[in-house]
Amino acid sequence: MTIDLFEFWSACSPTDRIHPTDRDVFDRLKDSHGFDLQCLPCCFMGPLKTAPVVLLYLSFGLDDEDLVEATCERGRDRYMKMRLGTQPLPGPDEHRIAWTWWTSRTKCFGGKWQDLRTKIATLEICAYHSRKFRDAPLLLRIDYIVEATIFSPL
Image 1 (spheres, rainbow, N blue to C red):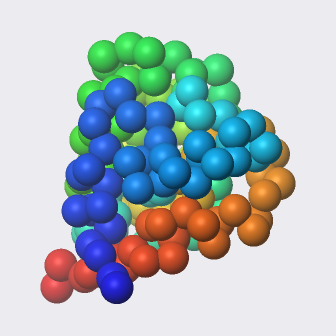
Image 2: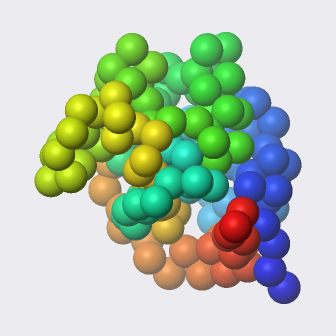
């Protein structure tokens, strides 16, 4: 079975800390994983639907700003929009840590960050935040990784 990645993420409410289809997995694991489930999940950042360049990474890191976003309306709203796959990469006023991270990795493309944010997206293999990723076997149990396929809009 394959599903559209954006449709899959539309099932998350603004306050979900775990995707609804992943709840059973995390309930069985209790706390025997390295993910901080106080953060909001998503496996991409930037305009994934249209970006000509997509950078693949393992997992979002973890910063105190991620924890704050999960508790405030502004952060939850940002994540809901981000899950649509049409939002530009965040600027320094939206999420300073994410902005610092992605601009450091896209310097090689040249140009201003303001121009790059609409042309580059990142796709994370894992949607859950962690300081140090340490549970690769868990990835095989998380539904969107096993089943999700991105359907090209073209």
